[in-house]
Image (cartoon, rainbow, N blue to C red; front, side, top):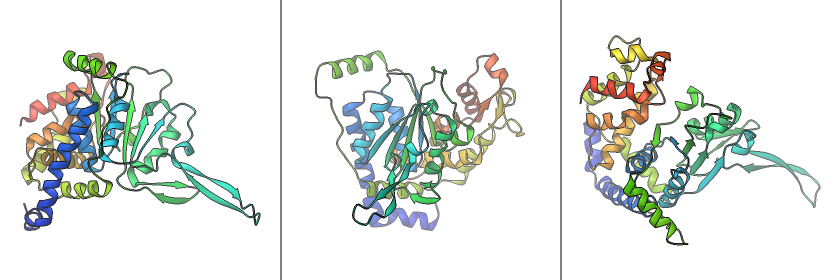
Length: 339
């Protein structure tokens, strides 16, 4: 930890912010738990995504409450929420908004007026993003990367915080358009939303079939406070040894690297980029804060490795022929690197 970093965490204002961070994140978990049963890992990944200021791709089977989870998170955060149902006929302007001509009834003059699209929000649910053509998918690209959209040559900034949570269905391939690697790389995480345990599924049935009024989450924070939390997370120090571990781990996913393990050289076509290393570092910082620590450990890096890397590593034909998934390759790589 440098002198500046140590000073930042020793100041009274920051200590107060740290205390507020703990209380708020505990409150967020409590509010989300009123609606969502189980899925603790997914909830943690969504909180990390928020605290890093990134975006998250949620992959899950139909009926696993992907939409409900995102809406509940937005309610608990006290942020504006909008949803786009991506379809094959969706146009880019349906995402970004467009200019329309209006005529002044008094003067008769015509003027352009911008009608903002649903991207102008804090939390955007891009539902079934892989069901729309690449041109419309690309309409999100600038918004996710630059926090702005361009309509008729004019750049319009989005109000922070801005969080895209996109869902896709892993089993329906007909009529879908796989996300290009350039857009996949914009997502901090690719989170897998799995089925619940038998006990959790029983609790869901009992909760949602025994009452007419559905439970809802109440706001526990504000947009301004979230921006302060995002600043706080970036102040968490990382030891050089931990940073070096993250760099070596990401580099090990590239088959051309001398240090790549055999499983990578055999089953991977393309490994993760430098952006993956930066996201892995930031995600580890956020996890450390959520765990109540002000320093990052190698375990933080390892815990965030799969959701950060699984959509950035492209396996080859040999992996498919032998039934090896990206997660299989990454887990074996993590075993090689130890802890």
